[in-house]
Structures are given as structure tokens and as C-alpha cells.
Image (cartoon, rainbow, N blue to C red; front, side, top):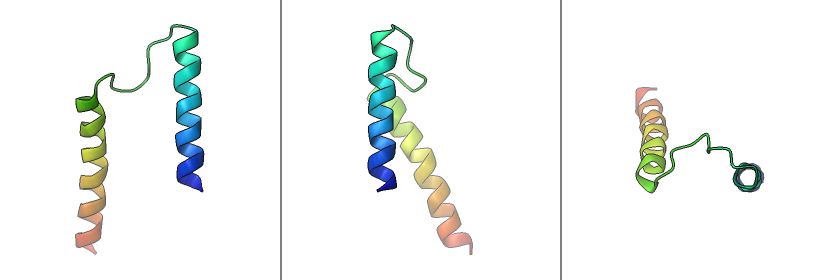
Length: 51
């Protein structure tokens, strides 16, 4: 449920930012988004194996 709420909130913020012509507070390309996901996954993998 939290993931659905987070996705919905993100979509809503993206629509609002586009409507008022404010630049997104996120990487504007797929490569930037994948880099952000990679950092998150690296963090999770480290904590998975460090315990």
C-alpha cells in the first residue's frame, strides 16, 4: 500500500510541477533515474550481507 501511495504522490507532484512550469526535483532522464535506483539497490545489498 505504501508503494502505491508513494507512486501516486510522485505522479501528482510531477503533474503539478509540469502545470506550473517548475523543473523536476529529480533526474530528467532514464539514465539518471536508473542511477538513483542503483544507489538504492547498492545500499540494500550492503545491508543485506553486512549483518
